[in-house]
Image 1 (cartoon, rainbow, N blue to C red):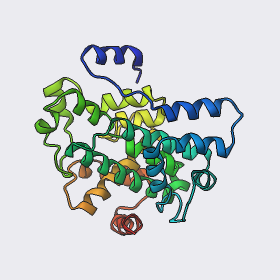
Image 2 (image 1 turned 90 degrees about the horizontal axis):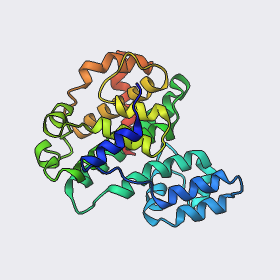
Image 3 (image 1 turned 120 degrees about the horizontal axis):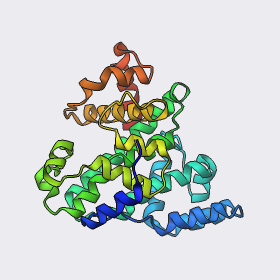
Image 4 (image 1 turned 30 degrees about the horizontal axis):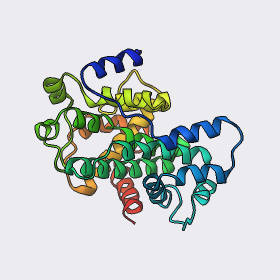
Length: 278
């Protein structure tokens, strides 16, 4: 798939849709890393300059998927335990929620809580299946938190978006067909452009674009990452006792991609959910 990103973004702007810019902390990190003259202390100081991102980073780093529940007392410790590359990936993923969330609106709160929980589940699956799938926890977490990043952009652009698509409960998910019919755009396409705008890895951008399906034309890391996302979404539905209508259409492909037998699905759910809820 080839999309002229700059032209697509110009068309969005012409229609009143604005993609969020990267926050200052991410730009400063990229510049410092590019200089080849940085220390753990330098990076920690930059990250600590954003209290919101720092707080969320600690929460994620202490989760079973990353820190294994270890007590971490400084950003430098996070960098040493997780590694510079993975920490920067986490900061980039977390930065999106910090830049466009709106805690005064119920739909935004529900959206980001759900995205963060799915991201955590995806990271746990990636950690367990890394030898089979070659997708790392930080990559799965980033994909999880970004996979529907087009939704809040549309929330901001269209005042009636949440009401029209009934997004005020955790059980309601945006419908691509309804989005296209109502607004002539969908959150997968917008999410892809946000990811490209933020210079995320190509395979994550494409996984965001196609996360509502298991595309046959996409192979390798893209298809595997989509499978991890879909299994994480399915487990989220089971944990919250809500319906996942897409699951039965893609179940066989997802399990096959991740090397999980159909008979082993329930046992695997119990294993991952226990880690997630601990």
